Amino acid sequence: MKKNNPKAPKRKNKKYIPSKGTNPEELSKRINILNDKIDKNNKLAEMKEHALYEYITLMTNFASHDLKNAIHNLDGYVNTLDVNNVTKDNIDNINEFIKSIRKTISDFKTLAPDESKCDFALSELGKSIELLNRGLLNIHKIQAKYDYNKLDTTTVNQSLHNIIQIINNLIQNSIKALSDVTYPKLIYVSIKIEGENVVIKVCDNGIGIKDENKDKIFKLHFTTTNGSGIGLYHARYIIESINGNISYLGSEDNYKTVFTLKFPVNEQSINPID
Image (cartoon, rainbow, N blue to C red; front, side):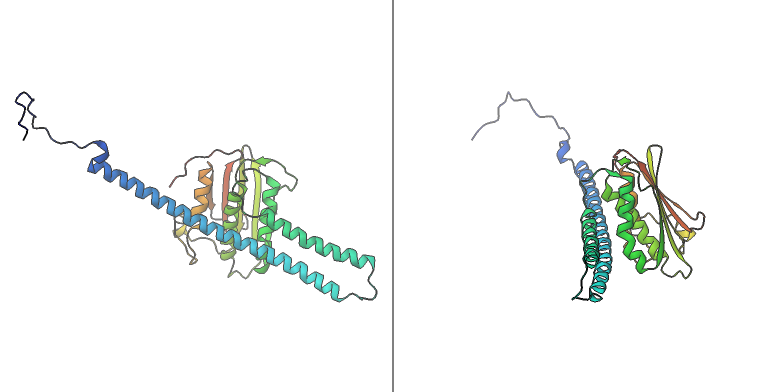
């Protein structure tokens, strides 16, 4: 059995202080930070899933509507032909119908979600919005006016997919706001460049938003339509992540609801504000 070394220095009565990594208070703080990150990631995952579902639904409606119409027209035309007397003009017309079907399929492929596409022409954005919403707006008998320069090839260095998601989300909200309207249903979408920013307006003449709800519409899970309450929160999150902003105006001209998006032409990513 070893004896104590009498020459060894005696230990002083010192208070035990755990190292930084094992300090209970420090560990508690780190756990809280991790939990906050997990909650934030879960919210992001939920928003992305919802946005993707809405986007695929729009694409399906677009393709279904346009393909159904094209095939219906082709079918009606073929049934009127005299099989014993088919002319070159008849063949040319059939080829035009087939060309229309091919174009719809090509447009569908072009509009497929692609988060890697980080630049687009202003005219490309306008065309995509028109194509995606055409079928749904026709079904609900809503007149849509799109104000953008179809020849504008200005390149915007942002994610086309993200911007389309935001605009489509606003149009979806407008469709809901117009569901019980008996007078002519109107939606107006303006896409322009002002200085170094892209400015987009989405307007409708629906029922509008009540005054008591104006300060709540961008909050997560807030809804007045039995929806998920994710759409506008997600829109704000995306637009702020590219150093832009989204604002709501109660009325302008003949429209009761006006949402304005503003973001830089060239990408300037920042951390979004919670």
